[in-house]
Length: 111
Length: 115
Image 1 (tube, each protein chain N blue to C red):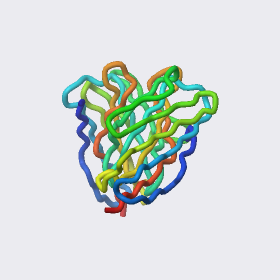
Image 2: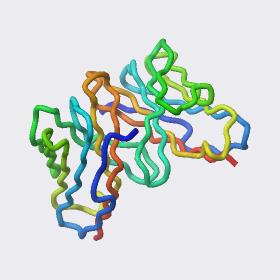
Image 3: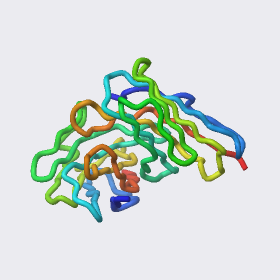
């Protein structure tokens, strides 16, 4: 079963604006990862944050993790039309390397 | 980054036939590969974990006799959908764990349509 939920389910913004997506999960984790999926394609790994980290940056991406609230957020700054895609959080469990994916957020960036 | 190749990208088959999907890690050895299923505008549901040289581990509710997984080498895992039915129509995606096993590299997916 899916680990958690993401909100919003869909987000539509103008180019140049920031996009924030949230993810909640249920069990203890080793790490949390964000992936991007363009329509009809496989997923691309964006960023990984470990359970003992609170914030991580990669280019225009900023990820936060609050293990006490079992939640994470992904911020995409200065969005571009090419950022239009579905974004999924995935939790790495304490044992093994299986990932459990959230429901995803569909992001549309209008130019 | 590591590359995972998945073939075919799209397949249309008649009900009752079997379909094989291949997943290859091109530039790294993958001792573990994962097979997911995705319905339109939904998340990925893990079907099974494929380990090289051993039997696959299936998630609850996934029929192992219907979805046959073979991981005969460190670079190839195959998923065979046996006696396919229209309800098996879906997007199937494989992934492989790279060195360290935390990050996954995904194939481009296979859209299966069963008529």
